[in-house]
Amino acid sequence: MLKTFKYRLYPNRKQRESLTATLDVCRHLYNDALQERRDAWKTCRTSVTFNMQSAQLPACKDADMPMRSVYSQVLQDVLHRVDKTYKAFFRRGNGFPRFKGKGWFDSFTYPQLGFSVSGSQLSLSKIGNVKIKLHRPIAGDVKTLTLKNENGKWYACFSCVVDVEPLPENDSVVGIDVGLESFAVTSDAEIIDNPRWYRAAQKVLRRKQRHVSRCTKRSSGWRRACRFVANLHRHVFNQRNDFQHKVSREFVNNYGFIAVEDLNVKGLAGGMLAKSVHDAAWSSFIAKLSYKAESADRLLVKVDARRTSQQCPCGAPVPKKLWDRKHHCTVCGLHTTRDHASALEILRRGLRLRTSMPAIAGMALEAPSFSYGA
Ligand SMILES: [Zn+2]
Image 1 (cartoon, rainbow, N blue to C red):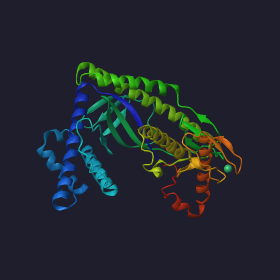
Image 2: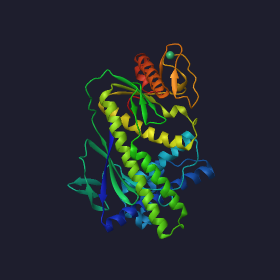
Image 3: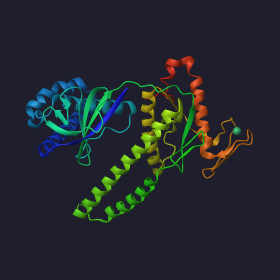
Image 4: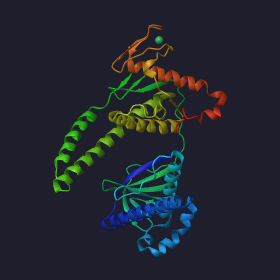
């Protein structure tokens, strides 16, 4: 399985300049490659392929000085990105891929070669030896290296193939529901609260955001406030990540089978902004749960969770309004909270998927409503 290891970089002034210059060259190439494909499609309905664009690279390099200072595989990777977004556009049919303005292109990739690490130095072809802080060892087989700029700070992200390390077998099963007031509720009736810092930071963010909007645009005060907000966002993001790593680790350690809601099935039902923020947090949590489950050889099942709040795990319908916080089933007598009943129902649906699996074991892994780890 693939795993990403991310480290902070400390480039000197000159290296910082060449990193930024590389980013700029890549961004221009990205836009040009996109433009070429767009024009070809618009004017004569023909498709420009990756191979066609890649074959032009040497000629482009001859004509363009800055391009010569960028490692050729990095440029190839840019064309791959264009190819990917373009294919996704044709598959999904939603909006034409966007041109990237300054600030909207924040990374470039060494797809195979051109980089190596020794000690606290990351050696990058065409850029030099950059200081790297290896706060934990890189594990597995390094495949690619992506250099990323986040709020002016540079990071190295190594994508590595790592072995699955199965945990001892475990028969415990659990269903997890997104809590409305808490972070999550499990089928064991355990409530996982949102950490206290979350609300506190949210409050500060709101206040500071108002401050930003009151400042004169592009003034020094405005700039300072923007930087503060960006840093706070970053801080909250890191804290949230930590929290999600801890929670997902516990689930994977304690349960052999985990059922969660599949966000993709729900479609565009919700629509509220607060809900979408919530969904974003939830999907990044599921991503962490997924790869931990995969590397520990646990089973994670994503279920269609539509109407889980309207049904009792016994099968009887128990209609509820949004504000009904209690679940009371007149058929089986289950009396509990709304979220707990939903978690039980998610677990029931997950287990049903599992039992229906063996007959079509190979295919079940492909089914959209089911995923084995990934
Ligand atoms: Zn019931």
